[in-house]
Image 1 (cartoon, one colour):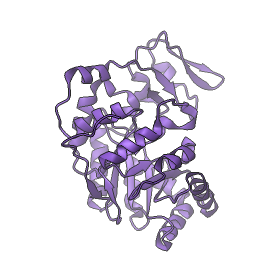
Image 2 (cartoon, helix red, strand yellow):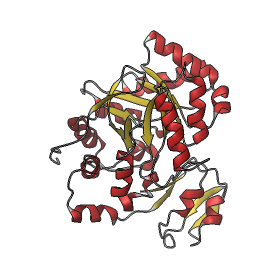
Image 3 (cartoon, helix red, strand yellow):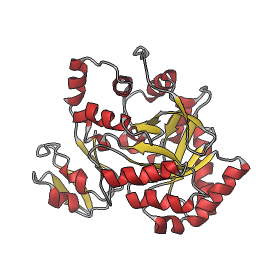
Image 4 (cartoon, helix red, strand yellow):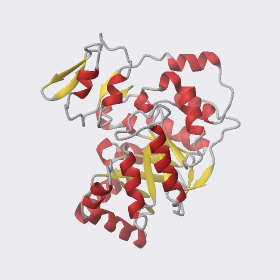
Length: 321
């Protein structure tokens, strides 16, 4: 086990208007989605995160890792779990929550509508949103939220302040993955939500892995955002988490360790929700992306990890792992 971090900046913060006191760093579990077949020790990672004071853990129905997360959280106190669903109505919400509770053997604390695009999308999911709020009033969940990759999604939350407690959105120095705007526009929208007393969770601070070669810059930018209550870190190992927390804490990191992290062998991975639109194929100047039966595949011998493809992907389906 890697030793604890002296001088760690992890602390508890109140998540907007909710009553939840959560760590300002959260552990994301996308790297351990079932379709990733990740061989790293997830339970060890969760245990180490908890030992540092991290008490917020994020998953989603689409990740299909509820059982793994539930087993890894067993016996830990004062923790909160976020999950996300594409629920449209009351039946969808009940089905999603029941599935999560059954497989994790614990309650869901924060329930979110996944990948909301705008006011119109939220109106289309209004039955689910209103029902989620009723469940919060009954004490079945502790907070209601949305996740989004769009400025219009963040702005949309401001229309539903009576129903929504928390907004999870993309924030990174390059604005990578923001579908309908740039970094400044996202910052402005999130600041308005923060001032409206919504809890703000920043995700994709490494741009889906595309910014890890500038990890110190990526974390430095995140540290400057006073309107974000907590940041999601999607790491795979204890060593990666220790490095990230050290940088978040402004601690001196061995130059060799930092450079080693930046030089780590990585590759492009196409997420299973790729729609096969082909925009990334046209953008790739290396001919490394190919459309096969309506899905994008990677010719790894041609890929130079320039990340230009990720800049144009409308669905954030391209990651560096």
